Image (cartoon, rainbow, N blue to C red):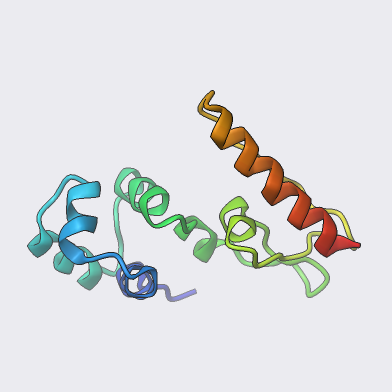
Length: 120
């Protein structure tokens, strides 16, 4: 498996529409270092975790290979972006991270309802 995670970060960053300087600020670095990160084939785990959260994309899922064709990779972030991937039949495993704010819970409930409707 030959993954250039920097190129993947660059693709997701462009697709997100976020400016490089804003992204740099969110991950506590400089715009120049963002270009350096995008040029790297590998990125440290702690930085990749921060980048995943800021861009709302699970970059760790790039390193997971499905076992057989009946299984597909599920990531909570992909569900949040409304791109459902089936785990087994019409069953989906969901993990929620809540921060105690009512609006976060409300948004999570709306997402779960959309997922449930898509599975019907």
